Structure formats: structure tokens, C-alpha cells
Image (cartoon, rainbow, N blue to C red; front, top):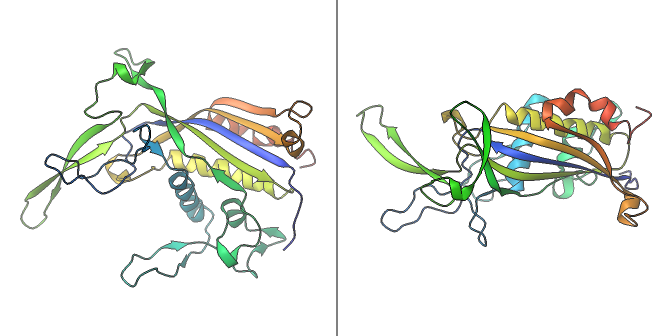
Length: 278
């Protein structure tokens, strides 16, 4: 395994907007009368819903595995009756492909003894912002505070659904808690840069974010839940010297744009500050 010195970190900051209701499940439903069947995950201190970094990272890895055509393998099951989990990872003799490391394993990491080198990507939990975006009667978007919005529960809506028995046509109603459309979350993703191959890791990360915008986050995506969009995207470069003396070596603003697509189109220009020879 070849070890390189850290050159710095690319910081991707953005707002994640819930375009449709978003549901990332929390603990089991409450058992008291009238309790929710399917609550969302909430911060235990603030009580606000949030997007776990593991959910965001795992979904992008899954989408990229299929987009890049990487083969998947079944992990060893913890228990005999536990569901199978299939992911991609490279064995030592598979990691180098055509003179370059596997971009998926290098970006997202590979656990345990399979790891060939440190994974490059860290994904923070995305916390709910104080404002949300809602359309007015003219179709224009305006920002409101949560105090100005009437929701059944703090920061969430309760959606009733019915599961229909295809034999008897009997309906089994259930409650689904969702963060409503228009909610905004503050996201941060950090990519460690060691060498020239990490340029493709950054490209792959942005590709994964684009794929997510045309897919869904959380559960019930086939029923319309979980469409998200990245807004107010910013890319920052912090050279390793920044962590020794940020006054003498400040961070560099690589790019900012209202949408992810805007930055994607200018990728080669944006990263030339880090990889000028590319």
C-alpha cells in the first residue's frame, strides 16, 4: 500500500431542499394510543429532524455502484435470518484498475482488512435550518420561519396511507411522518486530497450528488417521497498548511453556484487550482 502526504481537503457545502416530503425513519413507533406508526429520526436534544450523514453517504454509494457498473458482493450476515446486504468492495488484487485505484472504494472507503488505503470522504449529518421555502399564489418562492407554518407535529407532517390487500381489497391504514416539502438542511461533505487520482474522487462525489437529485433519499421513494435538490453549493479548498496557520494560508473559495449542475459544467476549470497540470 502506497502512502502519500495529505495535500489538503475540498469542502463541499450546500443546502439540501426537500422537494417532496422526506422520511428517514427513526426508532420504532410509539405504542401509546394515537402514537405514530412510522416516526422520522430526530435529534434527541433539539427534537428537530435531520439527515444522517450515513444515509446520505450510503445512498450516493449505492447509486454510483450501479452507475459505474461495479460488481457487488454479499457481506457476511450477522445472524442467519438477517437480510442480505450487497455492496461493492475490491480485494487487494482488484483495487488497481488500468493503473488507477478503484474510484468507488477510494472515495467511500472499504472497511476492515479489505481497506487498501484511507477512504477520502466524510459526510456530516445535515441539520434542519430555521427557515423553509414555500411557493406563494403566483408561484414565486419565499422563505418562512417554522413558526409561520402550521404542521401536525413540530417540523413534520403526518400522512395517512392505506395498504390494499390485493385478494380481499381490504385497506390497512397507517400513519407516515414526513418532513414537509420546502424544508432545508445544511449539508457538508469533506474530501481528503493526497494525489492526482483524487481528482476523480471529487468528480465521482459530485456525480453521486447529481444522481441523488434524480432519485430519492430515505424511504418510500417509489410513492413520491424523498426527492431532494442541492442548492447554494460552495466548494472550498483548505491546503494542509491551513491547518497549521490559517492566517498565513487561508482557505480558497473554488466556486459557488445556485445549483449543482452549474458547478458540474465548470468542473475542470474549478479544480485547476488544486490540479493545475490536469
